[in-house]
Image (cartoon, rainbow, N blue to C red):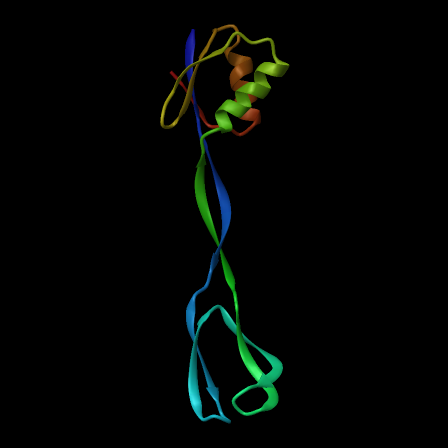
Length: 128
């Protein structure tokens, strides 16, 4: 029996984060600077209560930025083994779980097929 450590894969996840910044707009009719918090300023034609007339008034809209983060996928090795055992007559078994992945016990006669399938799926592993 050989022990094979199948490492958890890292995948890239795109997360959207709101942009929150200070926005300045000078109102030339009221002669004052106005401050807003948010992503961006857009303008809508609406009624101004103070001046009692229609004009373009600012509104604050949300703006998001996308950031890529590498996340450790802890279920990748387990999912792979479920699929592998469904389609192959295997006697391999899960021996233990570690921080890095899952350790499998694999018979020497099955080791070549087991490792071949891991390589085909681009899954990192170590044979002990």
